[in-house]
Length: 142
Image (tube, rainbow, N blue to C red; front, top):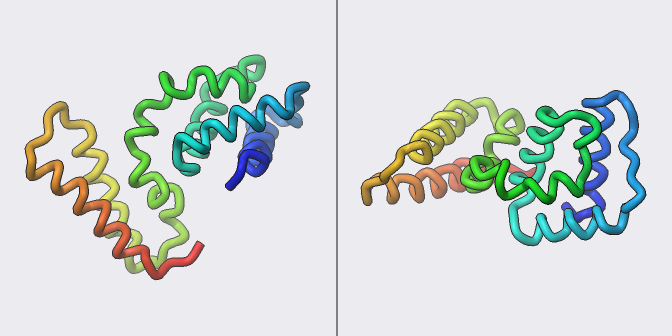
């Protein structure tokens, strides 16, 4: 997904949330800001942040510029979830027979993230969860 597609997603979500089209006089700047974000973070992280941002802000603060400025501070938790967000956001697209297993692995990963201190075994388990998710979903095409 490139910056132009991210902006289309933003516009769609904005219009859903505020029942009016998104308008801006700085199209090129917004594309550049979205491009910078996408070069630094995974697309699923950005999409999840857009969804949450637009749910939380008022219409007058709902701009891509403001989103870019507050991204690192407001969405630290989403950034930490980067390895599992693609599975979480697409859970309904996976075959029914593996959805429960994926959900359990996601929940276990989130539990490990909430721990203040992780043992070596827990750090290893986080990597195992990521590998298990990759293995479960390797045959699924999006």
